[in-house]
Image (cartoon, rainbow, N blue to C red):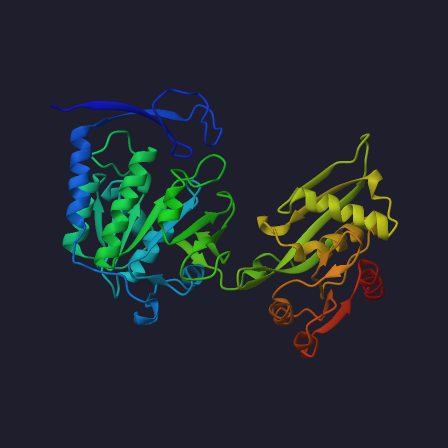
Length: 460
């Protein structure tokens, strides 16, 4: 006789409870609870399936030095920019999770990549949200030639696992994990239980068959990956696809990577024939025109240096307290830099509104942009243009001193490649960096913000 029990699961964090509460006791979120019915027959079938997958081969623990130190074999994804954020390519037997807003281009990117990989590898594209004809229409729009890419439209997890085992592809793409449903479990597709168990089943299959699995994930209205947090812990790599759907460029960013560096960044441009790689993103975020309030910096996203244009507008305020608005820069950082400028350069910025933006919609979180932000603000306040060939890099302390930032040599090399003739940076404490010679760029080292702008004013 089948016995059933009822539990309540919070869809935000995955916490379980036997009673109904409007507010989650773990994460504090409201009105995200869903009732799910669990039967003993479902639990038996799930435990039977899990136990059948475990091979009791009598393995024992071994010294870590006894294992063979084999290099990680990479699979070329078809796009250099995608390989960059993956750390050099896909790793056999790994799980990759790609999240992003609806309509941003996740399915387009993976369909293009799957078509390229299918030229020399066996690839299975499983569409759980769209029909086969819909995917075919997108594939025709991309104007691709004949391909050996296999397509399978299904939402049932058991059928999907069976197809992957029979076809045994090198790479399997699931679009999306929130649309899959395990018939042995209760709840609707996309619920915490379904997402967790479907992802765990795919992970077991990927590790046992050495198949690379790429999962497409939805995001919440706050921009976080939907589903339980265990999903991000379960996979090996987490990528986010960002950008304004009304703009042409898209940014692919690494959040987690067990086989490479995190915070890597790649840029794509959406065109009529699909997504095109932007091999030199610095040119995308720099404009040919110059104006008061514009400064250039070189930011580092992972191991990639990118030249970025900062724009500031200082205007006489008409409010009792001045307005401070920042786009792409943390607002608290802007307030701190304004206070340092007013204190150490004696500029009465407390009577002016300040608007700051990063050109191109990119977000800059590192403190290396401080000196460029201050330069843009002072340029707008004095209504003078900064030289186009100057780049400013450095962190500003509360005492007005400049602090060195990481990967300075890489940043200067990028500025030199782009044609900048002068770089104002903090004074090196590392003797190796101090002895570095550059051919076409003049590197000026300063110790505080006052010295930096004395040099800038001489160059105007």
